Image (tube, rainbow over all chains, first blue to last red; front, side, top):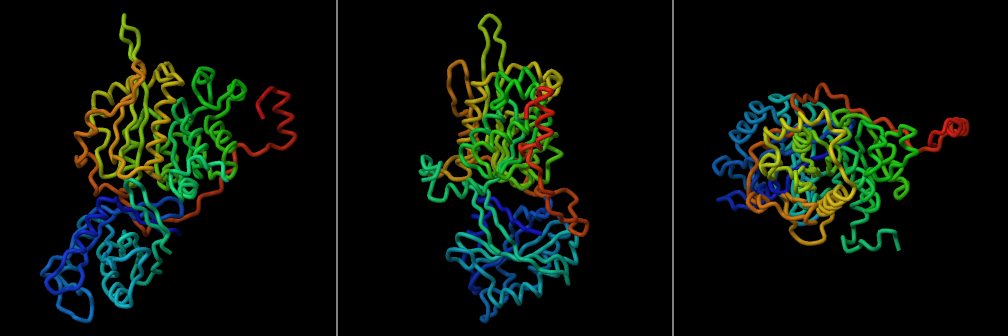
Length: 167
Length: 296
């Protein structure tokens, strides 16, 4: 199966702009993207719909990581997945150019909280995405114990349409 | 030097971008056949060609690539399109669907751009929006002006996900849809001419090229162009500027994806390999065709 993530240029620009806002003590910002899903033969399409930032007060002071979310942020995202029956993708940015990758901390934290979304919206896949200033990289969870494939291709829908292979 | 060398101003990577792209072409009549021909010349690598019809005698005034032998052979329009493409792009990835577009949804979902040259544009635009696919609509019409003769007109609209749609720009109205529905039964008798189809299709191919590999910075995201065949002009509809910052209320972002999608019920299967419609037939079939006067 091939997984493609599609997002409009306008939404992607809004996400990037929000993630670059400074925070009082966290070194970086994080948020969530909701997406609809579609299948096409052996391809899974993840179609981004909207973005919600983690609120200022939902960050926990933790000098060992760039940003640490509190439980309330995850609860709100879980509620979003359940109420709107959407796929939820955690998003943050590493900046720079080219295709980014998850850090060791990203991998550890993603594995902790992404499976929580599967339990409230099991009809969807969920996952995490890391952005650079020019590209993105991501991983998808099909269930608590199922395989966690990487997103093979991204498409930014705007003028022009930009596509890149990420895995 | 490649055969695309004269369009190298489209960018150093334009050949690869155009070859990697897959374009959905819904409707392969007067407008669609022009599109097929031009996209093949441009070097587009992938096609999802959709049209339920076979060529008829009255199509030959405008269907590019169609011949009288094709009429005699009851050749499907998708086969004519494939033959046209293969003449320029022998290795093109072509999916031909001789059916309504709803029979090709899985193939169309994987397209970078969909171009519609059909009457039932409303649902096709919604489908494209739902899957975050830019949609270009072309259409022409001939209006009877009584003693003043006829007005040949048409439009080209780019409906980009997130931007104004065909209803936002006033092209789709309930009244118009009602008129289209009434006229649909008599579609075969609607006036169509090759030169107007050519202008509209060429304009659409220009837009499609801008979407894939633009040759100037910041081309408009929403495009609504009017064609006046009597004046010989293609001009920006005034709503194109008025709606520049308009947010479409008709296709909200939360509509994306397949309704009622459930990953647990999905069976992801590779697409069956298509048999080429223009593959060389075995000798006995060619002899049979020749005997009965059918095109090979």
